Length: 191
Length: 220
Image (cartoon, rainbow over all chains, first blue to last red; front, side):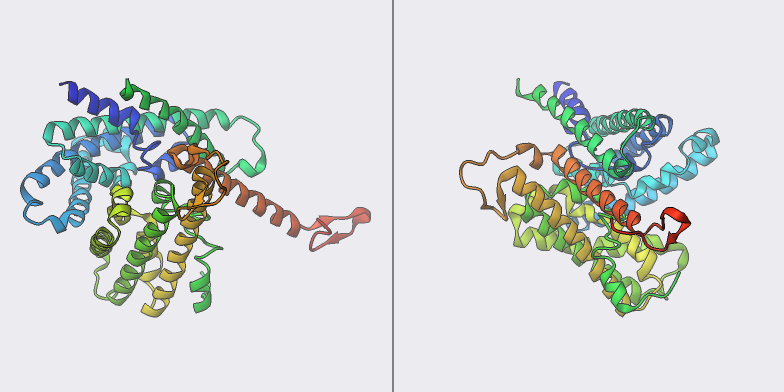
């Protein structure tokens, strides 16, 4: 139980996927202009990460021990088809949720956070339960980073910023400051 | 879109349409593995190899691959080359392979590679796609080299592991830690925005007194 708690805290704050491990930067920079879209993107991310984690546990248990060289290909194929299936199911079962998630679901397939989760979970040797906790923690951490970034950008939008900084440069420097702040969480583990 | 010459295919990726610095694609590895020049260069070579291999294969088989499943076919081709790159890196430079962590397998989802297949290799001849892949791959290497050099020189006082400043230099550790990646790329982009702003200023028609308008601006 204690271990699971630390996996959760570590994946959400200390080793935050976006700000510390640099996974999933495209949505972080691309859809962080408004808080509402950032929240939806985060939700879609958590959802896909949980499903991926479960599938990867199954692959690790039964398939990959027999064919370790297929790791990368198996992961990417499974994730891509899974997202496709989930999209179809949601469209049929809950059209409202489908409209909410919209374009973000297919976008997630090529999001390195998902494949990164699969690879990290494998290299850390997490089983089913640990993997599930790790996926939820990472997903929440990703959402936290997205929402923080979106809130800051909504405010910066109204500020008078020099014209040369009106591109991604400013966003990256804000991200750097956030990342600096998240490094403080590393202290949680040394004590 | 206007026709491009073979020379343009090769050269535009390196600077004018640089995939990282201008198109802002493939940012994850650019920020994650540029803490030292060694790692950045190995990552650059691996990505270059995957891009070149997949571009050649995709442009060779472009007439056989059905249009409906082309993206999946590209991803499978890319994943195959990434597996090769992963195994070769593991065998040749095991230390750097360990330092790169999940980022060699993550080349699969690097948007530069899938983007070039969809935008170029699936529509052009093998020769032109090879040139394009070499250009874009070199552009990625250039970006990795710039980022890696800035971060290692400031953050560790060395370049390719060779100490530069002697014992009195206090390294800015923060530059080789994650925030340094964001800051370095942020400042590189600010500098490019500043340069672009100056160029735009220089070609904007200027209105001189007495109603005279010139095509190109005067002294800047």
